[in-house]
Image (cartoon, rainbow, N blue to C red; front, side, top):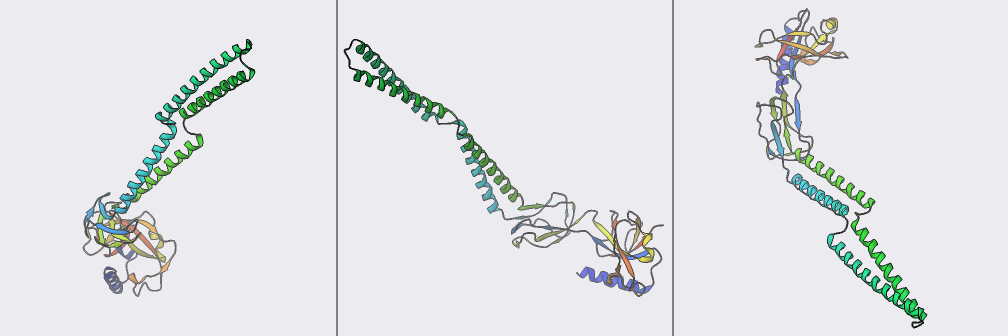
Length: 315
C-alpha cells in the first residue's frame, strides 16, 4: 500500500510539470503476482522461504500438519487389502479342509451304497427262490435307492465346493476392490496437498503467514513474483490510440533504469475510462484513455514494481 502511495505522488508531481510529448505516456511498473494459497485448512508446520528469496520451480514453499491425512492413507490401504483378500477367497472356492471333509463324506456314502446294492442283490436272489418275503425285498430296494441319492447329493456338494463363488458375489467383491482403491488414491492425494511447492521460478515477494499459524482453505501463504511477469501499465489518450498496437515494442524510461529498456505490448483495453488518479494532471483530466500493458524485457537492472516510468511508442 505504501508503495502505491509514493508512486501516486511521484506521478502526480511529474504530470504537473509539463505536458507529455506526442507518443510518450506516463505509467508505472506492475507485476502479475502468484498468490500461493493453502489447498486445505491446517496448521503451518514449515515455511522454509523468506521475503526476497529466489526459488526454482518445484521448490518447497510451505507444509501443513498431515497427521490426519497419514492416518487416512493407512486406513484406506487396510481397507483395500481386506477387499482384495475377500475377492481372492471368492475366486478360489471352498477351503481345502472343507473339500477334504466333503470327500470323506462321499467315500462313506459310496461304501454305504455298495453295501445296500449287495443286500438288494441278495434279497432279489432269495425272493426268486421264495425264501425272502416281498416286504424284505422292498426294504432292501428302498435302502439302495436312498444310499444312491445320498451319494449323488454329496457329489454335487463337492462339485459346488470346488467352484468359485456365484458371479454376482464376485462382481460385488470386484466393485468393493475398485471402491477401496479409489478411496486410497483420494487419501494419498489429500496427503500430497499438505506440502506445497512453487509452481514457477521467481522471487518471494511476501510471506503472508508464518510457521505455527492456522491457515484456512484457500488462504494465501506466499506471494510470489514469477520470472518475466513484470509489466508496465500506461494509459493511451484517445487521440493517440493508434500509436500503440498489440505486440508492439515500446521504449521504457525511468530514473535509474538501464538504457535501451523495452517492453512488448501484451494487452490493450477494449473499453475506455477516464484518466485514473495515478496519472492525473491538468493536461489529462477529464480525458478518455485506454489502459495498456506491456511485458518488460528480462534484463539486469530492470525496474521493480511500483517504479514510475515514461513509455514511448516507437515509430
